[in-house]
Amino acid sequence: MRAIVLGAGVAGLACAVELAERGVAVEVLERAERLGAGGCSWYAGGMLAPWCERESAEPPVVALGAQSLAWWPAHFPDTVIKGSLVVAHGRDAGELRQFARRTERYEWREGEGITALEPDLAGRFSQALYFPEEGHLDPRRALAALAGRLAALGAPIRFGTDTNASRETARAAEASGGAVIDCRGLEARDVLPELRGVKGEMLVVRLPEISLSRPVRVLHPRVPVYIVPRGDGHYMIGATMIESDQPTRITARSLLELLGAAYALHPAFGEAEIVEIGTGVRPAFPDNLPRVCRIGGTVYVNGLFRHGFLLAPALARQAAQQVLAAGPSIEVLNADCRQRRLA
Image (cartoon, rainbow, N blue to C red):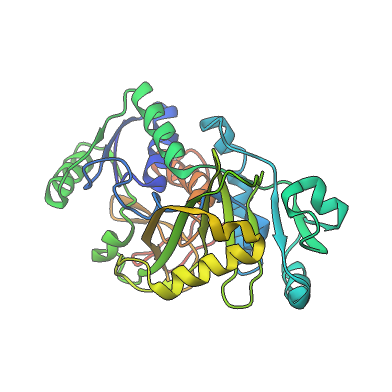
């Protein structure tokens, strides 16, 4: 069987890997000239944190995210499973308790318990929530690993493929009995008009003077921020969500708020070297839940919102089941992808 995957973001690559590992002849078509090329996967945080996300996300995100946790270490050995830490300063202790009420599978840590996890945070916080089963990864290295896996399986990625050429190739695949999986993100609004863009802004800083072993979320009163270690003294700082389709540069306000929240975690961040500033626009449906849906001969995987790396493996399995009819349908599908029943 032959399959064409449209889009080489994390969703497209995960779908391609799932199909190729099941013996399907896969080809990935990507409009950009190289891997990442400024897409939202390139600027992702890379947190594999379903129970932290439960604080603001719906139960399906937790269920699908938990299903994805084992997939990443199997496909990207440098995935780090050391949990997540959520902290708040004394004046914001109520925010931490509220966070705890909205989620599960955490441990309360105090004083020495926080120091045991993150020695460089010693004495800075009196309470924290520790989610031991969660993890994180470097999105760019993970994308490269998936592309390498596809190469090893003989599944090419065709970069620089324009939209018209992709459509012609997809139509030819369908006509010959093949499958098409559309993972184009916001580009798919020509078929999925409910999609909207949510811009995220991020910084990468270099600060070798301190060491963090896991993502730390700071419940800052203005902008709750996450700080994700990327190795070699580098940290990704993010958390902004702006309703916008435009991948414009980061605003001065966002930059100040992100740096201010990082400084609230540890004053050493005030001396950090800014290595990179970036923005990405994430595709989301009105309810912020993803879809795996079939329209005609094409299976659409879209609407991953801020949970791309967390959800992509589970959604890729669903898409592969749809293509190969390897199990019962997990989705209740109709022509506009509005009806669904996520496992």
